[in-house]
Structure formats: structure tokens, C-alpha cells
Image 1: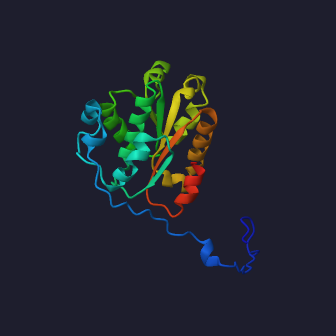
Image 2: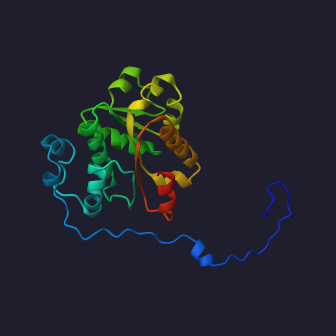
Image 3: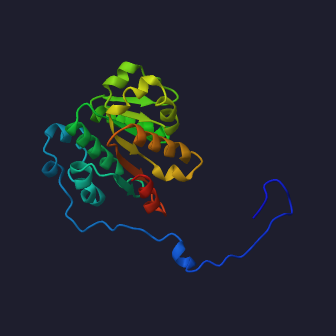
Length: 229
């Protein structure tokens, strides 16, 4: 115990915890199943989607193949913790396609704390999803009409936290059916509380919200998964 105001008043007391080794984080790794990689044209029947979204490869990798059914054929919440360049973005794209096929009036919110990734996603998804997206950062201020027509909103957590308090945005919140959180490992940083606030608010305001979370490798994925339902 150490005071933040006074010097020389520290107190140390040893505490013995029974089975202390079991109280620490346990390594939690899901080994990819030994399944044959799924071919894009065999599992995606819409030629236009293949042409627009998945035209750069012909088969899904091990992680994508294992998660394909959950991402494309269910509304399950998903937390993917995998290294950079493991193909996690494809899981988000599959969930967006399912949402649009199931309900063309619905909208998806993609939040990521890094502006560099926002620029990358905007450039890529404008081409893949026929320009049906809105970028929401401190440098942009979309008009209500663009919100009405957009299917995907890409934003930083801080900008969305402020935006969804305004009437212009709140009138469209009922149409949000999918929340994609990228770089979820940043929950453990000083900006993490904003991500938490956004998740809680979206869960409380919208009905039947699906959460797809993309993260780098973390030591406590079960805790994050519990928070994200």
C-alpha cells in the first residue's frame, strides 16, 4: 500500500493466496481445426459479392474457414484474437454481407481507435461495398442525408461516443444491427473506457445487436468475451 500524496508511509503485508498458481491467467488457445480450406466460389453463391469483396483470393485460410459458418450463417457474437495479417478483416466482411442480405435497411458500425486503419478501411470498403459508407472522425462531419443512405459507418470510439448523443445520429440508431470492434486489445489502454462506453450504449439502445470483435493476441480473451456477450 503506497500513498500518492505522502512519502514514507508505505506499508507492505504479505498475503498468501491458496492455489495462487491457479488464480493467474491460463493460456487460452484455440487450435485451428484440421479442415480443408473452403473455396470462395463454393460457399459464396452470389457472384457479385465474390467479384466485389473476395476477388483477391480463391479460398479462405484456416481461421476464416473455421469461423465461416458462425460469421456468414449465424448472428452469433464473435471474438477473434489472432496476430496481425491473420485475415481477421474477412470475418468482419462476412458478417456485413450477412447483415445486408438479411435486412437491406440495417446498418453496421465499425469502430477502431487508430486513424490509419480507418483510412485503410474507408479506401478498401468504398470499393467493395459500392460507396455505401460514412467516415466519422474529428476531420469529418457528415450530413444527416449521408447517414440515412449509408450502410456502414466507420468511426473512432471517441467520435462515435460524442456523435451518438446528438439527435441527428440517434434517430438512426434503431437500424444498427452489427457492431464491429477492431483492435479490441486496446481495451487495456487509457482509451479503453471509451470503447466500453460505446459497447454498453449500443447494447442498451439498439435491439438484437450483433458484436464482432477483432483483436490481437491477448492473455484474457475469456474476460473480454464475457464483456462482449
